[in-house]
Amino acid sequence: MKFSAKQIAEVLNGKVDGNPNIEVNNLSKIEEGKPGTLSFLANPKYTSYIYDTKASIVIVNNDFVPEKEISATLVRVENAYASFASLLEMYEQTKPKRTGISSKASISETANIGENVFIGDFVSIGDNTKIGDNCAIYPNTTVGMNCALGKDTILYSGVNVYDECKIGNECTIHAGAVIGADGFGFAPQDDNNYRKIPQIGNVVMEDRVEIGANTTIDRATIGSTVIKRGVKIDNLIQIAHNVVVGENTVIAAQTGISGSTKIGKNCMIGGQVGIIGHLEIADGVMIAAQSGIGKSIKEEKSVHEGSPAFGYRDFQRSYIHFRRFDSIVKRVNDIEFKLKGKD
Image (cartoon, rainbow, N blue to C red; front, side):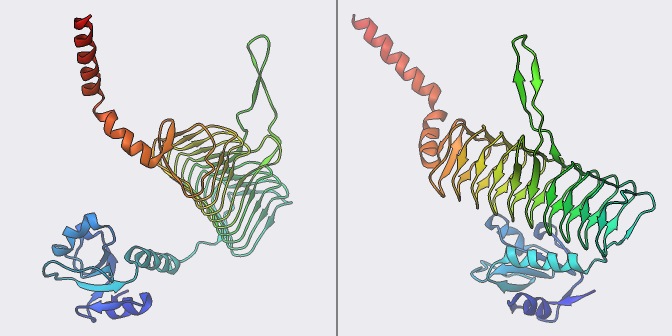
């Protein structure tokens, strides 16, 4: 299906700068643009590509001012990145949705299956589990006993949802994720062995949560590990027992959050961050990649970096000296040598 620059601008409430009748039928990255494709420019690092791109239409911010001639037709919008994302959502919605239940699936007679669902080959659904309307459960996925999936939720291949876990509406869980495995609870004994502490809680995931591939979220020892609405969790992340992640918080890949830590709402946590247990992170906190958090952060909207992490501005000032550490040590040694010579 083809769309003209004029049609795209109307959908995005944008303005055409160039040929309004030029058409596209595909998408491309701006540095790899081809005739007949639509691209976008949001990151200033990619500005140089707009002058050479072969893409027919490029979505740009309203304040973009070209420094030289551009062959592509521009669609000017308030926010190029958000507008392009909206188009991708519209494109995704045009794809036909899979429905039907595979004869190779194993579904308990006591499970409650909603309308217009897709359940693929070798899916297992346990006793008394409820699957909401319009859910899609892809092959080789297991949903245990007494679970609940809300409406329009997607579980991709190889997801494992343990018994008693609750997942809200419009959630997406990507391949290989494990929801509700036992928390890491072991009591040391006098003989240096460890006794397993039964983990009898569950995981509660609220609406519009997205979980990346191969991420693990452990069940609570008692009560619930809670992922609140709107949270976005990347691939390869470990969230331990009794953790609470606040609304609309985003967490990048390879982060680990230890047991009973409470993360506030609207936080942004970079990749490979480590957070020890029983801490509280205030709302709106930003933590830079590879930081180690060893104590609670109580200042809302503060920014932290380093291992152990401390205030971002302090870290940046200190980093100047970190890089010069060898020369500083040499200067100190020279001063000590000269002082000893005077003794």
